[in-house]
Length: 147
Image 1: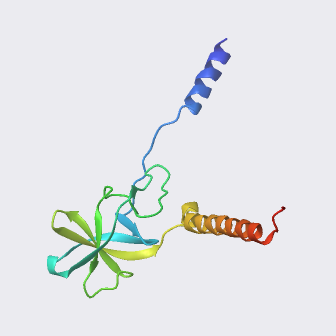
Image 2: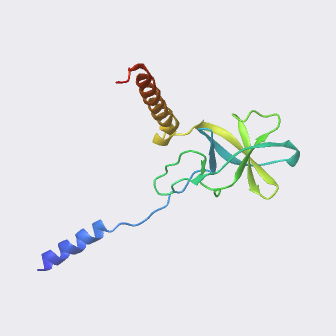
Image 3: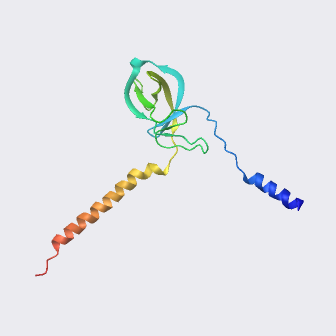
């Protein structure tokens, strides 16, 4: 009986899971399939260009996964801006607070996610539907109608 109880306690202890959040090495934002590390460098208001995007989702702090316009620190709706005189592929500005922008520098390409294929899938589905529609329409005009 004692062995059974001990085995049950051990199995229960091993089966119970604890939730851990990742500790990210740095703050980042993702824009146009590029990961940008947010620095501490403040960008002057006069150097801010046009709005180029915004955070649309938060990175998963348990699995470490992210896709699209994401961030591991900034909330949804945080806006990205171009910096005058700097290519957006090199650095962008992230709105840290009202009228305060922080520079984010390009690090690497974002990891692939299956949702990156959605535009191509929708395009192919649309092409097939249009092909079938016009084929049927053309075929119905070619066939002589019985009298």
